[in-house]
Every structure is written in C-alpha cells, then in structure tokens.
Length: 270
Image (cartoon, rainbow, N blue to C red):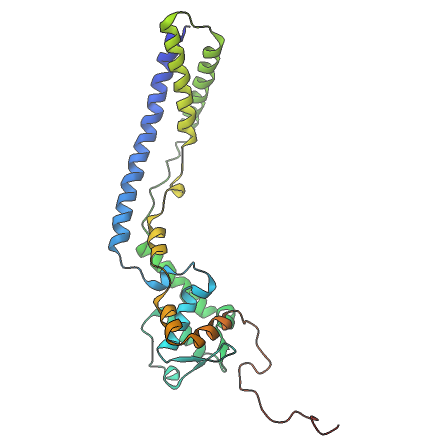
C-alpha cells in the first residue's frame, strides 16, 4: 500500500469525524444564543441571584437586612435580632418568601437570636429556602443541550474502528518511504489528517463544559439592594447584623436582657 491509498483512507475518516463535531458545535451555538436571549428577557429575583455569594452578601443576610429596613426586626450590638411590635403582629409580612420565612423563624423563638443561630438550627427556614431556590432553578435556569446519546455496542465499535484506522495509518506512514512528489504530498496530507484527528478528539466536550450565560447574568446583577440600602441608611445595624451571622452559640441568657443587679457576694467581703 502506498501513501496515496493511505491518504484516500484517512481523509474520509477525518471528514466524517469533523462533520460530527461540527454538527455538535452548531447545536451548542444555537443553544447559547437562545440561552442569552432567555436570560436577557427574564426577571431574576435578587435573592436568588445572591444565593451563592459569600455569607455576608448572600440571600439570608439580605433577608435579614430587609426585615430591619421594614421595621419588623431590630438588631443590637451583640447581633441578637428582636421582633418589633409590628414584627410580632402575625399579619405583618415583608412581601417576599425568604424574609417572611426568616420572620416566622424569629417568631418561633422565645428570645432574641442571632442570624447565625437561626440559620444553623431552624430546619423549617432551611426547607423554605431550599424550596424557593429549587423553584427558581426550575423556572429560570435554561436547560443545557442533552449529552451525546450512548450508542452502546455500536458506539464502541465505532471507537475501535477509529483507533484501528489511526494505528494502521500511523504504521503505514512511518513504515514506508515516499517516492516521488505525489507520494510525498500524500504522506504530508496523511500526517496532517492524523494530527487533525487527535486535535478533534481532544476538543470533545460535554454539555457541562459549555459557557453559562445564566451565571454571567447573575454575576452582573451585583450585591442585593437591601444590603446596600442598610449599609447606607444604618451602617451600625448593618455591622451588628454581619457580626451576628458568625455567632451561632447560645449564651447563658439565651438572648434575654442581662440582670444588672449586684452579683452575689460582690463587694460584701464574703
């Protein structure tokens, strides 16, 4: 077998391989354009947008900030959140599921509590938050294109034939010395086609490797408006609320006001 026949075998295989890859790329580009249009058109909830942000800028912190801004909750220097008279009224709401769930969690408490303690111990609030984000995922996040279908034995046979072709062509390319301009040209074309096959197989990717326009839209939304508003209106309360996120242990007074009376035996000489 000379290099011309070898090139006639390798070139069609390379063309078929790149034809399959090209069809997948066209499908991925079509999905990306549709996903960008979808993400531009939809209205994304700001609490959902900051779900994966750091603790001090996530949806939980934003929900607490909204309660403070609405006058439903106050926070002291120790980070303990207390219901106001309006917040204790069961008919009062903030108008959003997450702040309302946090408000309900504070109403279930018998004493003021830090935000970190509520997040750690209140399973009802955690369930509401999980359901809220799952619903937003289902409604808002564009579906990625399906992964290539598993063709079973037929697919394995195709891979085996491709590898056999590659080994046969590589052995023939390096095992024969070309003679004349035509065979040298065929040998060069065959070598380039084999390199192209390697590059094509190396560029194979799954749907999870595709760019995510939805994540780009979420990142562009920035911090939650309630956090920025609280920092501008009452930076002291915002700092106390941040400190309360890191306090998860219950104190001995469990949030109740400390007695300011004289301690037993203090100043009595006993």
